[in-house]
Length: 231
Image 1 (cartoon, rainbow, N blue to C red):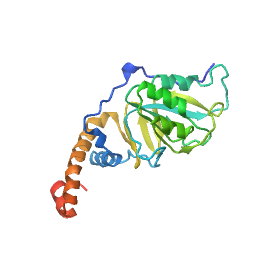
Image 2: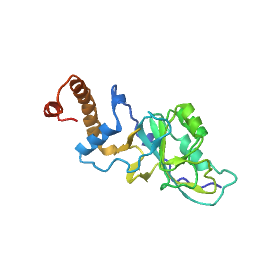
Image 3: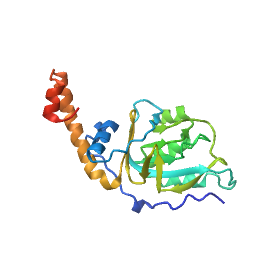
Image 4: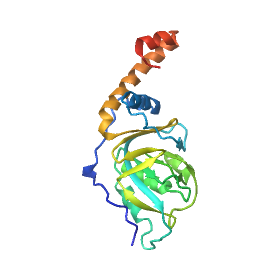
């Protein structure tokens, strides 16, 4: 017997996401400003989840899972629900793990990261803990978390839902939402507003290159602001 993870969305139910050329220039700050411009002013996690390796960046669709406290053990298949969750992750997705900021255990480590890499996943974001952190760094897998702890989650926490919505840092994240995590923080674009927000962000990224060039050439902040409306 194993803990049930709830209903797992099939691959056919989940949208894909193909970044456009130039999207590598997008940052959490650019996305945050674009969300503000679209009237979505509460889409940045209120806790900065630290990257294991400075300079890490993950940009893709969320694939969610929620853990809750449980001391019940399932000796025949203690990790079955987590295995099912990771087995369902797809290329271009980010593992988003909601734990209600639990410090009971770690929720992700080296082997989960290796399986995610093999599936084409782009990173992991959690308000819980990671372990095997140096090994995750060695794999080059983008990982963001509240902290680190070596303890296994078995008989301490269990998966209660997969593919639904979770709340991290005060922001509700649904599977399929777009997440960008970098050194500054984590921002979330609701799937139903992604076309608008991404258009704003891409336009901003293009203009910021011009603004930077003009400032470095000696233009004043006032002149640049009046010309482009971006700072």
